[in-house]
Length: 314
Image (cartoon, rainbow, N blue to C red; front, side, top):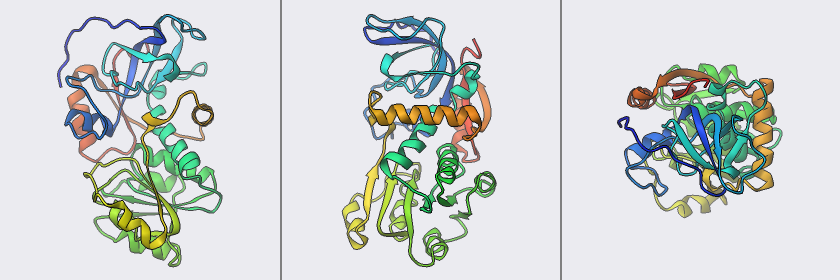
């Protein structure tokens, strides 16, 4: 990755140009960089799928927003590692008064992913037993807090020693180090042999297959990433023995005009505003150190959020 000068983009019809303050760093950025992202990407690419900032200009036909307004967004075409990012108006999230722009870049992708997977895809309920892989990561911490808030019991796994503390502090009942213990056996013991109701997996190759041994009959597994590589191809063979249902979730497929999206945005904003969803910002990097930020994320030592500072608080 390198920093280059480019013409300032202007918004087209139905679009908004945003002066970027901060851009959240996500594993998807790493996958885009190394060409392993499972969704179409055109190269060369400006990474960055989660931003905060202030509206710079409005495209034709856009109303309901003002130049200078503080907003966040998950740009569907990336582009967040830049001074200016153009985003469809439907993807713009107006921010509550006085929300810091660093915080505003740290919650949208991970918070909305967690909220939608729990309540629209998995539909957890009070007493649900939930297994969260990579529980010490950004989405894992959001899933933990929102699941506990919904009355669920939470079991997690980590692949790096020491990343269990924060999820335990947030209400997880138990966290398994996958390098030291069989998580499927632990899940069965934790549920007295029944199996968990839901599994949320962003790891992929290292965890997904064994997750089918940890789930109960008619349970639901939600895959939303492949940090350790793509898992086996024939999911059908693993679904049949226990009548398990399976979903592969991608936030970019959610419809910003839908009631479920709008409800999720409102719920996450309120949870962040009132402190019910805590966002842990680990470190902030300047734009020219984006490669260092990726290296830190790939070290697997991060339990929280890394941010890229572009315009700062503007």
